[in-house]
Length: 261
Image (cartoon, rainbow, N blue to C red; front, side, top):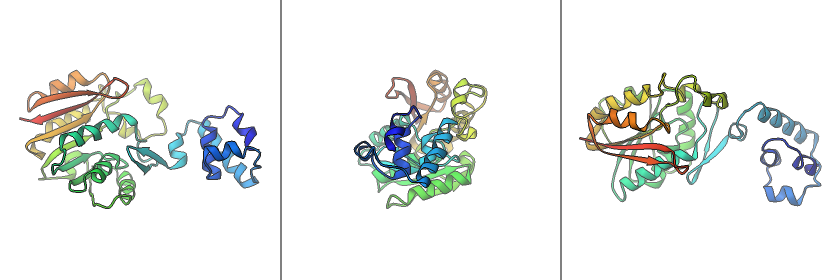
């Protein structure tokens, strides 16, 4: 019966039951005497085993909420983090009631580009990724909104040769190789997480190449690690001005916005 499982110590058991039975948490509580069928019990045990092996719940359910939308996710894409919603807020405040030609570098499942395109149907939005598999997921996710996004495959700016934008936004890999934090992320694509010994390899590429892809006085917005802010500010100073730093909702340094000189 459901009651037996609800009393167990299995991780995310309520969500797993809801997933298998396609019922709400409230339904589970009010029908805790429901007897699972052999097929349902088999599915549940498989999910419990995978969850205990560390597979994130988002990969088991195949979806993850971000901002006001729900996105498809697979092991080919990172799982959306609430911290990244900060980038969306900054971008929305930067171009209130204004047109914007936006580039989302390393879009992954497309959460930033799609969210901003949905919030601002009048924006022109381009999204890139090195991974074809990730882009396929992003394209599927884009079908949940009405306006079209231009998806391009390639490594950073190689995907958008000779193109310029008003705002370039990116949540690039920024974790240091060998960081202990990675021990808890073994099921997510490592290439989307790490960037060299100090975690700044990809951020350096983006900062160095962004100026030739920005319109006059255009903006660059980056997510970064909690301990990288000062180093990134120094990297930006040569070609950017009006550098602003932001903390996430856990009061960790998380984002930087800079304007082309």
